[in-house]
Amino acid sequence: MADASVETESQSQWFIDGLEPEEILDRFTYRRFSYGKVRMISGIDKVPKPSAIRLSGGRTSSLGPVLGRLPNELLHMVMHWLDYKSLFAVARASLLGKALVESLPVYQELLTYAPEVIAALSRLNILGAHPAALIREALRTEKCAACRSYGPYLFLPTCHRCCLECLSSYSPLRVITAETAKKYFVLGAKDLQKIPVIHTIPGQMDASGKKRPSSVKLFSLAAVKELALSLHGSTGGIARAAYRAYGEKKPAFLRGTFYWKTPVGRDISTRFSHRACYWRKATERYRWYCLVAMPFPSMKVPGVVERGLFCKCCYSLMLGISPRERLRLPYTGNTIFTVRNKADTLEHIKECRSREMLAQNGAGMVEPRSP
Ligand SMILES: [Zn+2]
Ligand SMILES: [Zn+2]
Image 1 (cartoon, protein in one colour):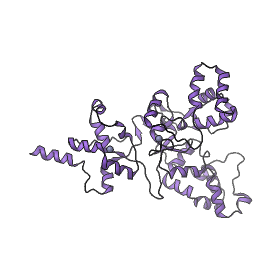
Image 2 (cartoon, rainbow, N blue to C red; image 1 turned 90 degrees about the vertical axis):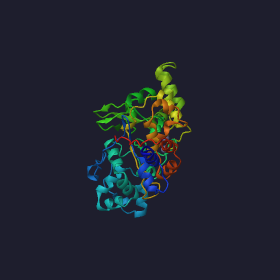
Image 3 (tube, helix red, strand yellow; image 1 turned 180 degrees about the horizontal axis):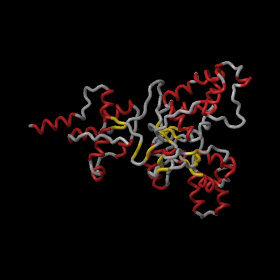
Image 4 (tube, helix red, strand yellow; image 1 turned 30 degrees about the vertical axis):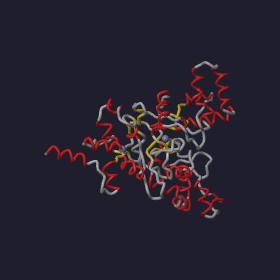
């Protein structure tokens, strides 16, 4: 009799009848931003003060006689498309500039909801690489720019929102070293000076779990390809340059074909499913992505911040059984890595097959380990 009551209790912990949505989310979800050894940029909370931003040579440090006379509305429209480095410079230049910048939605929203992104862009040396409007656009979407599932990360070199799977396997969300860029795109060191160089933050771990004590210089693969296109004319032109440099059968030429195919521009949506991405991951080594990406909240509805949720039922089921048993499950095990917004999570939990199976077995809840 005692056994039966224990069983009932552990079974009932999986029931959601009568629970409020917030209670369901509280009990059955968790957040995570690291996977084993893989950890994105974190712990950077020091937002650079406008006075700490150095102006690069030749840039004016005041609003100037022309801009100063423009109406505020027009100034707002112009400043929307400035990068954060320039916005900081304007804010530093005069009281009027400071008031103007601080009243910009692009400035207010990011500083309120994701100040660590500005800090990280500054540490990576690319604070001046993106218009503020572009980062705000990423804040206002919640879907991965590549696969359209929920994307809890921001790929800082291009400011695309993305999911872990695409980040770790899809070439537009990739960074490469100067050596790789020069070799596969037939570029010189001088050519590379035309695109932003990313200085990784010392002490962060790369995707192989290796701590990088010193900074690594990296380039966005998409930016390198765009540069190569401007120099060699077309993808065929890049291939011909590589052919002249290496000959058709050399590994450097053959491997280059992967790099040359990288889609460039803002639209990087892909028809590839994650399964295809996993396969490609096995064939291509992505080492640097966690040094240039970070968790990024989404605010599709103004004022409503989402950070992505995982299902604790799917986690408990996967962690509570052996790998052999996992293979026998009637559905794929990838659900433990699926991250969703609150509404989709609620829908998922209501129909979660893991929760049903756990309730039938009376199995206990496995608490995810914090990183
Ligand atoms: Zn994706
Ligand atoms: Zn689930």
